[in-house]
Image (cartoon, rainbow, N blue to C red; front, side, top):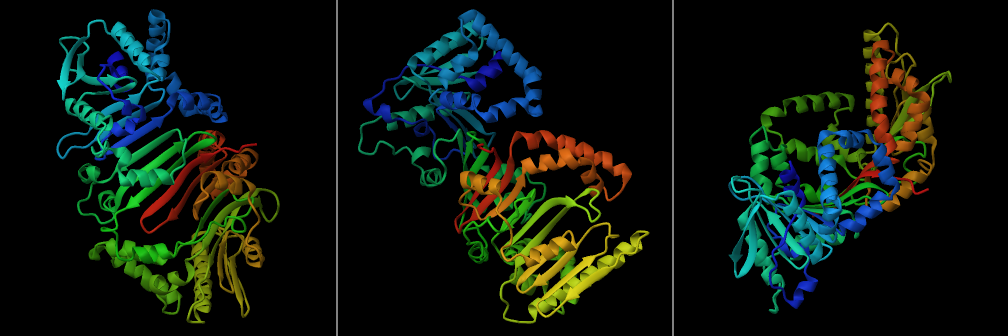
Amino acid sequence: MRTRILTFLLVVLCRVTTSSSAETLSVLDLVSDEVAFCLEIPDLDTKWTELDKSPLMARLRAFPAIQKVLDGNGFQRWMTLNDLTEKKSGQPLSMYLRALFARSVVVAIYVPPQGAPQGILVGEARDAAAIQEFFQTWNMLEPKHVTTTRLHRGLRYKHRKRHADTDEELYFASSDRWFAITDQEGLIQGVIDRFIVATATTPEPYAANTLRFSPAFIRNRARLKPGCAAYVHINARPWDRSLQEFSQAENDPLGPAAIWKNVSCVSASVSLKDGIVCDSIVDLDSKSLPKSWPQFVATAKAEPSWKGRLPADAILAVSGHLELAPLVQLVINQIPAESRAEIAKIRRVAQSFLRGRDLIDTVLPAMSRDFSAFLVTRADAQGKKVVVDGAFRSHLNAPADPQMVSDISRGMETTMTLLAAYFSADTQNIVVAFQDRNESEFIGWLSESAPIPLACGVKQNDLFVAGSRDRAVQSMDLKEPSSDNPRLTEHARRYFPHANQLIWLDSVQARTAIERNGGDLAQFFSFGAADAMPRWLSRFEQLRPTLELVDSLFVAAKIEIDHLHITFGGGLDTK
């Protein structure tokens, strides 16, 4: 067990000659630009100290999943080894590791054309003494180790076995405060090759094609925030073979392997300052993207405008600025012809509701740009219990055909009538569909006997679907769509100022609603079925720790012609 822990956490020493240019050396200079996966943790010692004192760490310590890990056998074995090291050397192993990884540590994985992935650990210690002290501690913990010295291009590296009779072997090298360790001799030799180039005094010292000077890496790192806890860079093409082998269906146009071929690389950062937030850049391969992609991206151009779109009491919300029709058509075009029969049937049924207009070719292009949806809680009509309400709103593009809005509202009216008939046939209560209509607006709703509350409406060029007649009327009568949400405004400013597409969960309001009205909400989602209520109450209880970990959960994005900018995670209030 000691060997396994050390294999993944440590590194070592074998001094090689350095030149003055080593002062500007970066750990990323020792990683090839052909790397399949690279995780970089810069300034680890300082970042760990900041995290340990942060409000986030206090919440993490109380999080059940973290508690389970800390109480587990694996962590307890680590603590035993940590304590043993302190007894023998005067300092716990964790302190040696923090000194060893103090300035930077990189985990790099390469995927050869054949065979399994190969990994190497490269880092920058606090100083040369930290490497020597760790080496001495490692030798103390494994007194029967066998180490031999080898040469590559005139520089030394070490080959180490825990004892003479084992097949487990490691290769390591170091110079001053730099080090590398791996179980692949070819990878350690590659690090030495790049080290020689990076510390040379030639006019082109970085001709070794390192990750640090890769154009894609430079471009994407500039798009990410500086000073984050960790950074990830993934080259897509080395993973094609593995992903194809993992995929269940061959030649599936919507499978993971097929979608992955549209990606050239992925870069991401992880921030732990006041939340757990991943900011990612997905570079797209223009050669493999479908021809309709530019049309789809053109509809997604809009400035973020959460204020006035989502109400302050929204617990769950979705907001976007794009047309779904090109995306839906793009997906349909990827589906094999023999599998499109069911989709064609749905389109024909929808045409009968919409006076012959095709849902995808005609209606979606008119109604799908600039949409928002949200869920809130409210007291029911009698004021006796709390129920879930909400609304969906889509701005209708001004259609060339003035009859379009009328046909959409007529289709909604027909749908409501059919739903009322369906619910009446399936329950003991009669459900009735009501409608109000004038020249510029329509509103329809189901009676309170409906198992699922529903209302819809059209006013001028806005379409609404809501969980109650009152919510539909309220949405339709608002001159400004919604009031400001202070938490959303502040978290958007800190975490995703670039985004104009959003999925948002207000954790504070969600946990407050569960604490105060969990029984009512369980009854609402159970549709009155007594045997289903305990399951919902159990789900709420399971969800509670996650809601207490952060004050918001979100996925935010902006779509560009050559990349996607996606931010996701959980944020903390600063006050």
